[in-house]
Length: 454
Ligand code: NAD
Image (cartoon, rainbow, N blue to C red; front, top):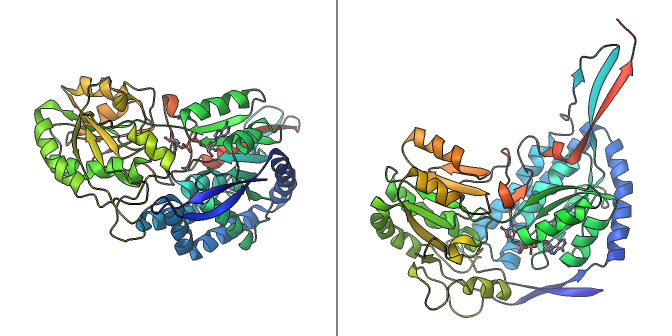
């Protein structure tokens, strides 16, 4: 069995080695998950609801530990990591209500009674990225379990620690250890086996569009269900009638949160030309004010990038002759530090078109509403975005015209567990979170019972 070495990205210290599973180990795990799913689905809905509430309670009792693990493994600032662990608890609590509410329909038909059932799929395979390891995992496993499925989950190679701990916490809460299994391994081994294994009935994949495309193609061979949450290149559109001070003060946090390693990062700021100069004057001190440093410190707003390899990828977008308008600060010494960076390139530059997934933002000027919409939509992605305006009609016109799944007006909010989340175009397929998520882990079965005419 091979191992991977998990590194603290803020210090470059080795945290520990994690065993990487092979195909046989995945097959064993899936076989156990199949049996566990049957036992789980036979439990009364109220028992399954109580089990998920117990899981949420154990997570709640370990918020500090989970957050500290994420600080060490991913370099997330401690306040952010605590929010993430609390979010896992909240997602579990929210979907704990579902087992008792997955009601079908009774449909009027002639000669009998017609009812629908939401049957679980069986075993669901979840493949997660490294940027928000535990929150993204919970968006899959909580509604999947709530709908009566078993889950096998493959965390990203760089950041497996919180997911492994969550599986232990589930077992400590009383869930069958075979019902929710975390299987660390290489994408091309464990992830691919999820795709090819006939008893894994659905894949929830979050990651790059390149790998997501491959997962979807592989799933097609078995008509396997997929939910895909992929990349983004979202626009933050600043109109001249907005509260420009607030738009500029918040813009850094719309893109530099999690060091820009956020699929919803508003990494293209589009500013109406007549307020562009003023906006840039206001943006410069806001960027300088982002506190970059030790993620374990409560003051820190931005930590390091996740790995040396990723640092090199981000660095490649900012060569020495890059059109840098201004930059924030970053520590020197060990750790994968990259300062918040503001670029003013041409519209066609690759920094404008490609997902950088680091603390690098491009600012472009636009002429009018039509130009802003065209620019916002000039991308193969469509995940998120913000619109800054005091004009309600314009806000609604523009939000309807922007091709993206999650938009916010006069804020940069993207994720609430009670509202649907997902992308248009090549940002993904399907939706996570919100009230309907458990239904995406079921098949609708229609049953007609002949009773004769009444
Ligand atoms: P990635 O695509 O490299 O890896 C994602 C996961 O897929 C990892 O667990 C990896 O091991 C696995 N994988 C790799 N090859 C595989 C294969 N052949 N078959 C099956 N699985 C395989 O992405 P990443 O670098 O970990 O994450 C960054 C990307 O994720 C960015 O593009 C980002 O926008 C995207 N993302 C999207 C969302 C969203 O909700 N839309 C959220 C977070 C991240």
